[in-house]
Each structure stands twice: as C-alpha cells, then as structure tokens.
Image (tube, rainbow, N blue to C red; front, top):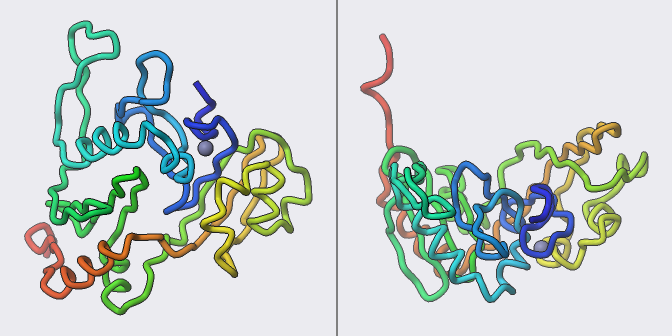
Length: 233
Ligand SMILES: [Zn+2]
C-alpha cells in the first residue's frame, strides 16, 4: 500500500489541493477498492487518477454511503466479529444529476458535492453565497502541511506551484489546476529535516455546471442553521 502522503491509486507524490487532490483518513473506514488485499483507505488521492480509474464507481458508492451514514457498524476486513463501528457525515441528499449528487448537513451549513466519477467537494455557507453571485467558489485559504517524499532543498522557497509539482514529477496529475493562470499558491514554510512543506493554495473548485445551477437556486431559499438556543446570556 502506498505511503499515506502518496496517491493511493498511482503511488506518486500527492500534495493536497482542494478540488484536485483529496485525503481520506484511515479512521473513516472507507474500503480501499485499489488495494490488492482487503483494507481501508488511508491517504491522498489525485482526482485525475480517481476519474481515470475503473474502480471509481466502487469508490463513489462507498464514499456516498459514508456521507449519508450516521453511527454504524460495518464488517471488519476479515469478516470476524465484533464488527467495526464508524461515524458517517450524517448528510442527506438534496440533488441527483447526470454528473453528481449533492448532500446537505442536518446540523451545520455544510454541503458535499460528489461527482459520479469520484471527486468530492466540501462547501460551506460563504462558498454557497459565492455561487449565488455567479462566482466560482474557491478553496479556503487554510495552510496545508505536506510531507514531501524527497528533500527539494532551498529552491522550494521560491518555487511556483508548477515548479513544485514538476520537481515532484507529478505535474501531469494536476493539469486541471496548473492550467489555471495564475494559480494562487503561497509558500509558507519548509522544515527540511522532516521534508515538511507548509503552503496555501486557493483555486476555483471545478464543480459541475449542474451543481452550480442547483446550489445557486438552493441558496435563495436556504435558511442558515443557527444555534440561538445554545448561546449563553
Ligand atoms: Zn495518482
């Protein structure tokens, strides 16, 4: 099984970029359709690899189940008892289209768009409002930390996103994002002893047109969830 920092499909370096390369953490207990022996996914996935994989439908079924599930029992890898328990995202479906399904949280202003070809996009309320204004929603400007498979040396301080991906030999996995010019990429920090790179990428999320159209409409009548009852005096 590839290192968790590498793509679980192709095994190459996979720095996360929301909308283009995502992460499935092991505690989610999502079955890994690419592993040769029964196992759960734990690591990153290039969305270009996901869309090109003949296992993408299996992944879609498994992932959309998790999105809608609550607390549930699932079979352990070898079928032995007791079964494992996992926590789903507790969302419900609000849209089914030719290209994607859309789910909404019951407890927070959160949405999940999942393409039938596998890629997923988590959205918050401010991103929903951007869609209503006709703007492509962008990924949040959070700092991502990624452990590089190799030390890229001091040059990393001045590299563009394209340079970085080329140095890692994976620019062809990210053509959908590096073709966007300019890509909003910012180097934050690099800790050479552990190959730890901190960076920020803000890229437009490549939502299907049918998702944008539905969500723009949906936002007009959506009432944000508030927690007035929980506010103190
Ligand atoms: Zn890959």
